[in-house]
Image (cartoon, rainbow, N blue to C red; front, side, top):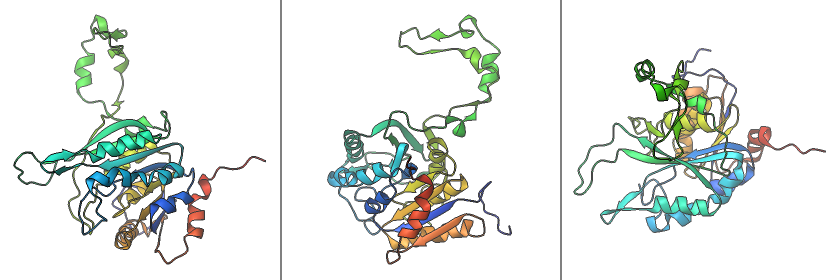
Length: 313
């Protein structure tokens, strides 16, 4: 192959379909198809020139209109990851984010964990009563309390501390040592001998994207990539229902997953298509963009076919 992608890609057999339209209807075509929905939805009252602005007081109810589509499109072990941040209203933090998560839980979603995206390079500025925003939420929800998870896929080097610590094993380190406060937690330090990797924390430190790329809220490819590796399987389907500039599509293809990107803004769909084609058009990955006037059905059928449940005669 002549073209070299800046991403380290091992396999080149996956598809990315970009559909311009309303994900609340489009995703109903993908029943039980996806391992993971990972997305950053429009924030409340944010960037009015770019999104349909939703007031904070109405945000949770608006988001619930996507519940049926999200639930239907995920398989039984599937996960939903929402990257979002609340905002200041009248001098205080408006808790529309927590209201949204509570409403999802009331509809049957299980809140598996809360992740923090730490941004080491937040925008500078001055505010009379607060400091710079250096993080955002990433909520992991699922249809079951035991969703698919591959912790080894995101394991990190254990660190230099382990050599010093394991060279000084004490009497309580060769067997399980229960917590003295009777919390039920315990540890056996000797089990770490010879280990090279450990689980990462649920704080993900990733810098903001350096340039705008024609979209007001581009998140780094590394963010969806982390959750794709953790919560999905190779060659399975990833969905982003608020696809924006297409970062989730890039993350899916570089991790050998298929993906469906949906956005109701034609300009963002074109932007995502241009961005993915630039990276992958000369590789074996297939990137397709359909605008609202085109017939989705054949492309939809082809993308979802591998994930359909086979009827037993």
